[in-house]
Image 1 (cartoon, helix red, strand yellow):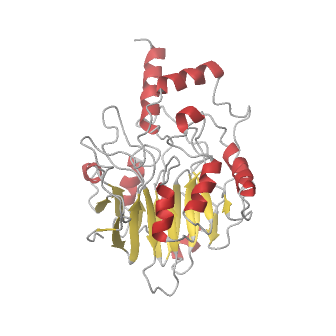
Image 2 (image 1 turned 90 degrees about the vertical axis):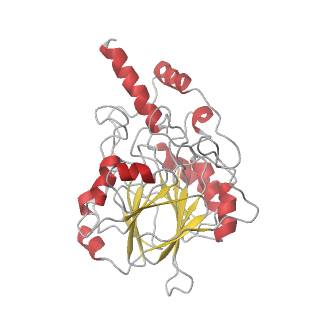
Image 3 (image 1 turned 90 degrees about the horizontal axis):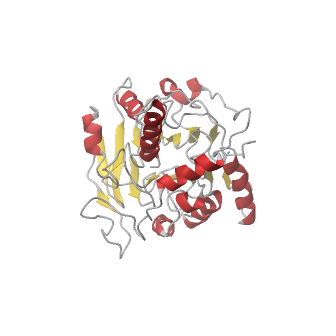
Length: 365
């Protein structure tokens, strides 16, 4: 096999891989729902299976059309440098810091929560090939405060990064609690990570004094060839307990295409003070739409779950699809306007930008 052929094969494997304190759990499943997402071989989406679109056809189209087409001089996204000392000392303010892609640091009720921690250079099973980070993490892993809870949405390499979770497991002061979808606990154990709890859709648990729920999304899972949909995927809801003096509710949508699941979530929980909703990696539509929402669909999710404020994630960090990395924020502004929402209802942040809730302002992207 030629060097070029080997590189092409490794690239295809990398693309396949990406395109893709414990308490008793209880069910928060909506009335009338069932366990139909469980199959003999793993898991399935609630409302319809994902179509098996041709990955090879997409890769051929990319080659023929020279996609994606980044600017000639590359992307130059501004990066904030948050006050690390303040973040580490904070135990009272509710804050959100966008690290990049689907990684964000949420501080609420004195608890430090990180979503889909991804600090590596590449979102790939290999660190010499595969999607490469275009922007450094807005907050270095070493600069994080002591993390109490890690929320994992699914096992794709751009959301479940081996090096990042291993480092978090070794943090000074003891490991965080890793909350993961069904099927991922054994993978964690293989990495030497034992403080893990896995949940099914609509399961809930109490962690660090907060109520945490695992909820459906429309996506899929795989880390290699032969393990497709063997582990579950989804989003997370975190709420202060009823009667809390400073009530706050948070929704992390994970990685998803659009589906009626979001109306189910909105009906179940009523509303959210803050939501993280993906807005990027949507082109070409014929291939990506079943698994990745575009900014217009993201705004529909914002409305379905009755979010008071949403932040766009899953853009501007890794080149995972054919849409330009700087396009999602522009389309989001258009979608927000067309929906008749206030300009600050659904915004993006700069990498590393920290906001104190409700002080989110649109980023100048």
